[in-house]
Length: 318
Image 1 (spheres, helix red, strand yellow):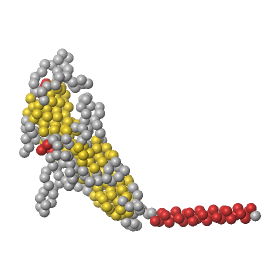
Image 2 (cartoon, rainbow, N blue to C red):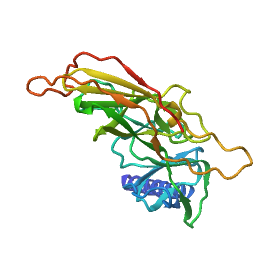
Image 3 (tube, rainbow, N blue to C red):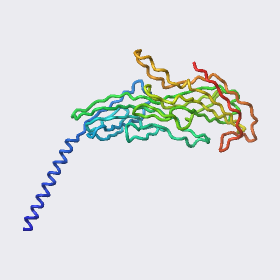
Image 4 (cartoon, rainbow, N blue to C red):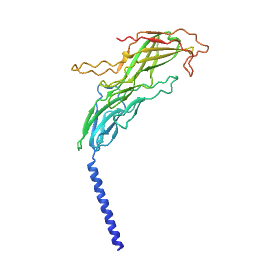
């Protein structure tokens, strides 16, 4: 009798496994994936291509699920369950740009962190390196045995600025700290909106013969979205002299970095926005002669000496 019961239990167990296996296979049939072949078109976008791209599919319906993958700059295939999705793509090999809020399409945001390792007490953030993005919403992935081909042209959302300032008495300057305040400091990949920077953006400045050259970059909002709250954009230069005194110079560059007005409706097709912008500064900065302390001196160090009067430079805009 015990043997009969044991055999019956084995049969019941085998049937339960069989039915469970069928249910699992049915579930897989009801939850398939479709091949999505992504191809990138870089023509006219970048001379130097990034290392690779990250793509994220955000489900908008219960039938889908979040899918992310890392692709080459040429593209690649991603397996995505059928459903409605929002999608973002961006290059991931950035040195200064960081990503946060990538748990949702509406919150994924690019930004830069605070500067470290600089010989100054000025609180600044790093300028962003080139960031290329793609975003799409309300896209439908159908159940299909055929691969769905999707071609995108990534968009550069960082602008690069350069300037040149004539400086009389540059021999009296030991070192320079430069930053720009009032620019955009982060970029929401989903809708192209920006937020103001939490701190001035660090500017790389180098001096030549009686001239100071510098460059920086900043996020650029989409043409169709709002950007900064219309505030002033100011470039600040701290000229640390050889006697350890500091001369501060401020330059109003608001008009020079303002985006061009949109074309009238019904007019010609809107041209691509300029991403390399030269800021015209015709004024000359004059640095007073100072006596070089014994042993040379100079450099900003941990403590800065007396501050000279602040200089404000009016920026002509052509």
